[in-house]
Amino acid sequence: MKKSSTIEQPLLEVIERRRSSRAYADKPVEPEKIKALFEAARWAPSSSNEQPWVYIYATKEQTELWSKLLNTLLEGNRIWANKAPLLVMALARKNFLANEKPNGSARYDLGAANAFLSLQATELGLNVHQMGGFNRETAKAELNIPDTHEAVVVMAIGYPGDVEMLAENFKLREAAPRERYVQDSFVMNQSF
Ligand SMILES: Cc1cc2nc3c(=O)[nH]c(=O)nc-3n(C[C@H](O)[C@H](O)[C@H](O)COP(=O)(O)O)c2cc1C
Image (cartoon, rainbow, N blue to C red; front, side):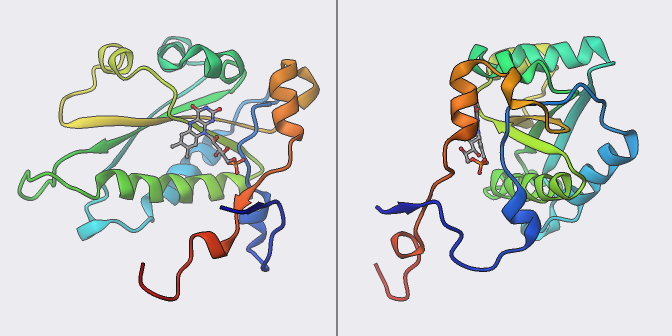
């Protein structure tokens, strides 16, 4: 499948600007901006309007909770995410509230909410880096996650920082061209 680094069509500026950087400035995220991020998630679409998303967040000043979130991360993520002033764990509520049956869309809907949150963050000058690389068992134990919920990603959030401060391997990744499969490889105007 062919990839390219070119944006082929005009995009919303905020989509163009969003990226998952690993460099964070040593500057806290203002409380009203934190609220704005979750407000964006709140207005995402979801199956049956179930809104199956739950977020646990901590700012760096909230040392105990922030450290618990950080310690769920795998080493390769912790090494740079420890500079992020805001850590957020995104969880999906597994069953519908109305009838307690499994909600097959819960993770899908959480992803939509996280996408909304990420774009809102970009608009506010913030960088969001989602991470699937965390230990689910540690998360469950450290954050008392009940069986009704599933931790899906942890997000490192903050103002963009100096890429030069990153370890060499991460610096190279920041500088590498961002690639995407071209539309012809995933968009069909016919059946399979
Ligand atoms: C569900 C999910 C899990 C991810 N897990 C990690 C991770 O554990 N570590 C990491 O450095 N980046 C992780 N990423 C970031 C992706 O690598 C990144 O989004 C992708 O390379 C595209 O880059 P961009 O977001 O800058 O466009 C994850 C992204 C998503 C959506």
